[in-house]
Amino acid sequence: MFRRLTLSLMIGIVSVISAHSQGTFQPRDADEMEAWQIYNQYKESCRVADPLEKQIKGKFNDSLMGMYGPFGILAVEQSDRSEAVALRNKEEAELKRQVQLLEAWNRKFYWRYGDLAWFNDKIKDAKNGRDMDRIEFALTYFPFNPKNAVSETSSTASVAQKGSADSWSSISVSLSKVSNFKTEDRPGRRNSGTGFSAEAFGPFTVRISIVGKGGVSYTDYKTNITVKSSDGKVLLAESPVISKGGGNASFTLNWSPPNTASAMDVSASISGGNSEGFTYFVSGRITTRAGNISDAQPSAAPPTMQTVDPASVKTLFNTGNDYGVANGGNPAVVTLRAASLITQISTYHWNNGQGAAGGTIKLMNTNGDTIGPWPVTVRAKFYWEVNKEIKLPAGTYTVFDSDPATWAQNSQSGGRGMVTIKGVQ
Image (cartoon, rainbow, N blue to C red; front, side, top):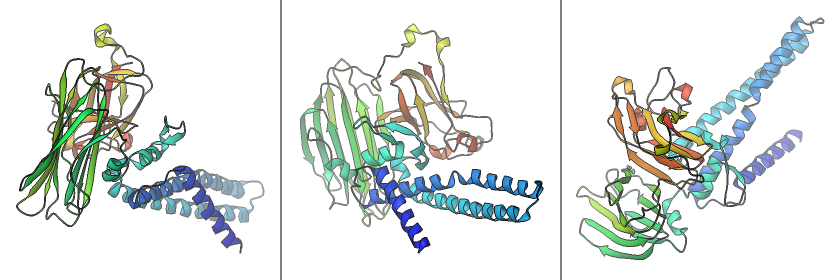
């Protein structure tokens, strides 16, 4: 009876913890329900396992006191030792469970929500003033399936779309805070798409979602996403591979146009199907007018390089170290405690002494907004550098490297890719 009551209490406690983590939020579909379950189970396992090591050490100390104390009561020593062994077995079981949960998370959810260990990073939700961790924030505000993101866009958003849930694939480009939005069908036998045009008079947001349906294509889907400003600056360049078994990819870009007339060109495509190949695409242009160009709007204006002595530039963040490295760096997370003017972002690609051809580096803030990407300059074969002035408000940012397969990392960096950020605060 006592064991049954204890089990009931434990189930109730886990349910309360899960409900507290989710607040009043309800997952939008089965995929998100699975993500919440893994997230809650991992947090609970960490909560159980973390204090066990301290308890184990305490029990062994008790054992030693029992063995060498003035009374030398062996029964006490044996009791403590048995309890310590039981605690160790419990700890190992929880650690094994965490490994299994991490593997399940990384297979399906890492690309969308990031490292599960980020639940230790705290965020203030500006929408309701509630304290949240980074994973809870992402699960709440970033739909796992892009088609759900499209359905939840505000009434002011304009959507250019090719394909639907019944098609072999679909692409949607959602524009927020634009006017004079127009679309046109661009049919074709193999290449079929949708064109669009719009105007913007200040900062606006572009959300691009691509979905490939499972069981249709003989090979993995090939995609291409490019966003450029009219002066040739590449704002976004991605080519995610979507499995022939089905999958999706989505990107968000916020842009503040310059004071002079300019434009942004958006192009997204997906190819697959049979050996002949079929392509869906969505492409268009947003013409812009007034605005204040910057990669992000700072909450307080940082100094400009024209008024700052170069000697004032300092390292604001660094995950590098002098120990041996391996490939496969995970995105790094940096917190800027004040508005900053970044002058350089550098990632390290040792790659067993081979280095790596240049790619891009980008940032993402806690709202899921992408800043960049920027093409890199390769220095001394191993260092990818973005040398430009980037204004950032205080906050937490995730650094993404376009070639994580060669991005250096080690246990000292916590598996995070090695990155150095320099600038002025």
